[in-house]
Length: 230
Image (cartoon, rainbow, N blue to C red; front, side, top):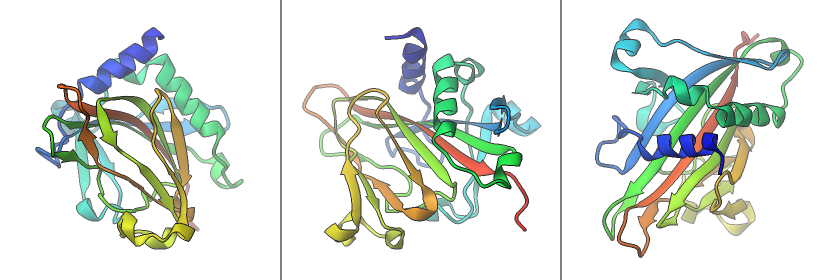
């Protein structure tokens, strides 16, 4: 196991609680970057002065997350050391290589959001859920999810469905509209969605049979073009 992966895993194990979901079993950090498609250069964006003082970065999804519609959420910032982690930087470059951009978007910078998110359950019979806890779209053209680790965790099944099931629960989706169902189980297992073509959902995490917390940690990378819409 590489030193870079060990550092990324350690950062996920030490994530702070999601300030917008206390006692939910959700922990996270966030960072923002600008990516230049023509040179493949990545630049981490600075936070505002007040965000620097508080150690946070702002994340805005418009109305795509009904639990936090129209709200800028200030999440604890990913450390400089992790932002410069070689494996993380290589993953971002890999993700970009899987995307497609029009000739207009390809000559504008891309906004890159990087999330470290952990779901943790400490007691039998409890669950930790993602946000939003429904089939949804993120509002970013491409979203990549990379498993960092899961330990003593049950559940966390991913469901990819057709777009019309946004806002619905998995039981509302008939078999014909279930495009994929799977679990990520191995470190760096990955999936990606083209946001406008699908809706997607990840099920809650439950504690397994071992006498330790159940945990599932994910690296999310989302991509948004920064050009003016005409």
